[in-house]
Length: 147
Image (cartoon, rainbow, N blue to C red; front, side, top):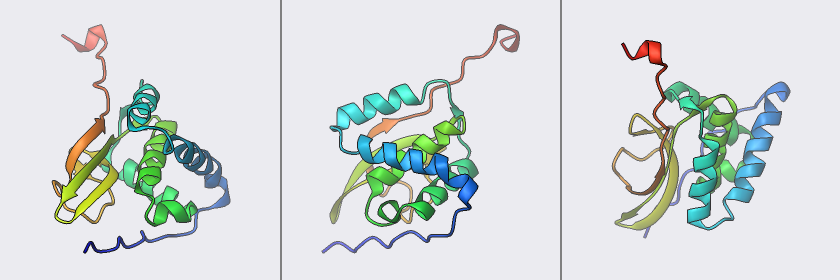
């Protein structure tokens, strides 16, 4: 028997910070209805040109998404992770977006990572076998930086 996931802690989000979060959660709700290969394709296009996210940037995005969306605060890990990644992208950065499974007990999950560590997740690193990842793209260095 699997343990129910505990809803994430929610806080109030100031009105001025809500519009981009609403856009990210709405878009994530639509994206989450797509087939997995299409989700990966959409997120792969969206991540282009983004710098790597820091843990604090990804955590701030996740907390904003959870504060505004009851669905994302509860069992909606796919929508939450997509919304977090989209909100990060709206801020010019990208975390690694991941989906995976564990076997004992079986459970599928979606989350974001920075430097190989899950951000804001109750599970320990490696608890889920990563099945699909949309990682941050390596930044191209300018010619004067290469010397």
